Image 1 (cartoon, helix red, strand yellow):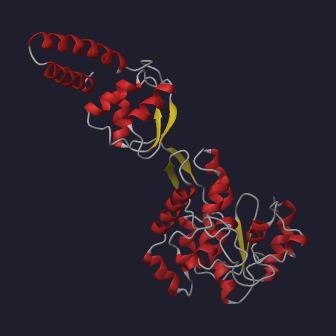
Image 2 (tube, helix red, strand yellow; image 1 turned 90 degrees about the horizontal axis):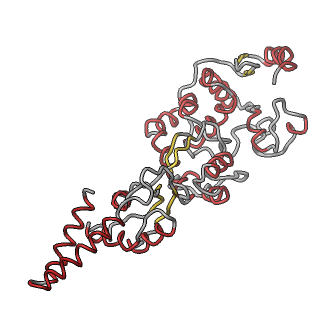
Image 3 (cartoon, rainbow, N blue to C red; image 1 turned 180 degrees about the vertical axis):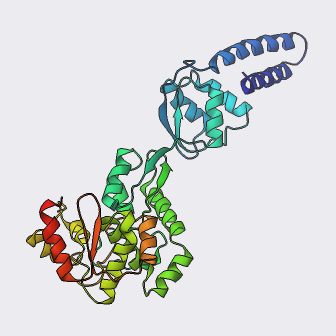
Length: 351
């Protein structure tokens, strides 16, 4: 049994020492052997070869005795006493770490203690797609059992060190919209929503570098303006045309033209529309970039790195209009007349 056998031999020596010599030694040895036999049977897996596992949450400062009791009640180990004795003999009784663990009756107490002492917690792999909103991210995390949807939406109201997000502009739903970086993460089930949000913001801060901030300033843009534009580009175009679409929006901003971005209007609609209705176009929301010139008050999704790079390094083109047609191809125009001709040609067929 490896470490388990070593622990038992130490226990034998201790009982013999306490027993002293003569008959006391023989009695102590007999007691030790009985105890060793019991401990040996108690330190094996409850169900050798079993691949059944359960998620077990160990709270901070939990003792080996408490953990052993919980594991025994769930049928993962045979004896909480043997679990505690082994933890003491191995010197890890006070080193068992909090977290969520994937444990089962096919594991021995020695294996379980090794996991707890090393803090090898169980994590769930979850990928946040580019272009997801805070609401969509919250739903995805809840589906994976990472954190509750409502709790995450509350956590998304924090700034997490992004000082430029304070004060929050009027009309912004979630302060962290746009700054929960789309990537693949590993989180433990039931992880606090604030820790999950903080991890995503940390990834954003790695992606948006000091060089990016310098590049943005050279273009006359703040960091938040870059992210707002990138979020619109993310929703309006395919990656192959990101840099050209970014150029269109930047050109329109320089000429003080409304962005006319469908994605910003759809952001506040209960049901997004492929072709905006007159009612949607008349919506007074500050996200309606047909009515209000300039940028909306905040990002409309979490842009990926490619969209951010497209805003920082736009194509050198003078286009002022674009239209994405069925199949994902994006067509560009220099004048409103050219754009109108494209709309008349493709609108009836567009989905």
